[in-house]
Picture 1 (cartoon, rainbow, N blue to C red):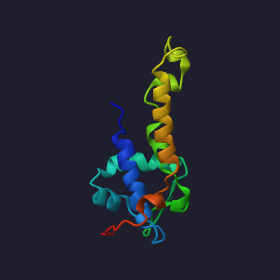
Picture 2 (cartoon, one colour):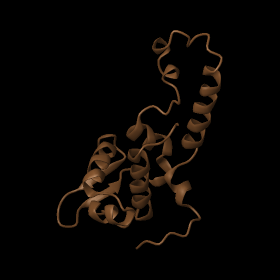
Picture 3 (tube, rainbow, N blue to C red):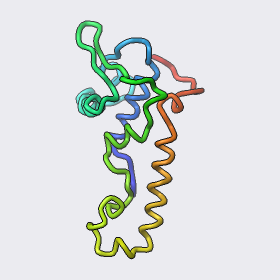
Length: 140
């Protein structure tokens, strides 16, 4: 079964949490973890990857925390998922023809390519602002 792992799921939820608080100043990781029901230690790891990739930035000090590094409308879901999950290919042969002897002649490879393109299209055409726009979220 093709499935997004908890890295992608929880990382995206953390990014949504930051989107809901965009413009309000830095957000403490412990608060995100509590609101999203995620271990702070696990969230530390995910946010570190997102920070390294330039999607979030950290502010040190008494009023520190995390912020989105760009406006929510400039951060596509595809970017987040690829940072946290790597390739979204349902089959390894889509990323590396050498992995399978039948890759060049495989009739099923084309359907998996269409599946990958469909997923990529949805994630690439949706940004964080789109995800939360029009929703009634409680800011806690």
